[in-house]
Length: 396
Image 1 (spheres, rainbow, N blue to C red):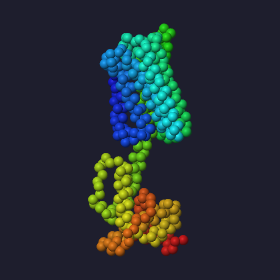
Image 2: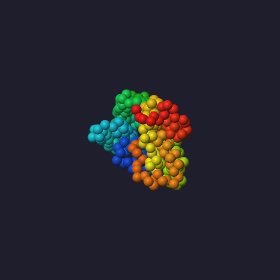
Image 3: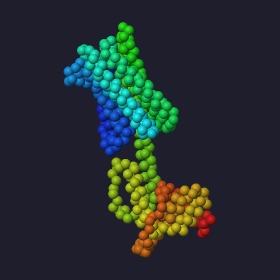
């Protein structure tokens, strides 16, 4: 792998982190969001500092041959801890237990980082190796122990991640299970990476030479594992975002008939704040619902409670369930009130009416759908001649 193969994932991760930055600043106390940002930041740093051109530059700047080796190993260990902490916070549970488990992982890998630095300082690695440091110094005292320690720390993290994600995946369903299984697949690649590295090192200990496993095969596996795991972490969040957006736009359009029905009676209808085309669906739904509530409030003096009761009984008689019948009755009352308001251009009813609220909570989406489909509403509008079951004079 050349430098570009390392830098592209680093840049992509930095871009994602930049997008997440404002959310992090607003919700820094959220341990889950904080864990996500740490994982993203450390992923980018690992790719950046593991690139051979960066390794050479860091060695030159610091003036110590192979100083990049413990730096990359420390970043890999910190990344492993961050992934474990992310899963712990993502899975949730009692806050005290979650906090205690997170700090155990952080403390354990903090000790590993310190040990890596000490072992490198005690060892002797004068010849700069950009791609085959592990196998070249596999027999060097203290450096050998440093290599074994970092491989062991990564192996512990890989096994722990697979166990935690695998067990959790058996307990959940849908996009969360899919995301967890993708993370497991990513860590299977990481275990393959560790196997390649370890095989090459052990071969050196026994006088063999399988350096290509460490210098050529292992980096490809590590890159694949990191990117697959990143997809696994992002998949549930991305699916949730897509679902929320789809639901928002669907709700926005479903509210359209009721919004248009009330447009002639809404106060300030012609001076509503215009939404830009890129405004999120949730904001549009909020504005549309607010417009509807304003229209209902201005129309409340024309509401006919008796008509609503008769419409409710008629909807029940036609086979609607109680919730649907209530929405149809509200829609019929609104349709009749719009006609009554149109027949009172001087607003005499409003002048005589006592201040009134628009009523209790209503299912606006069902009301909007009933405006187009319910025969009860068609009768209230005068668009259809009442049948034998339409608006009985006395509620049963």
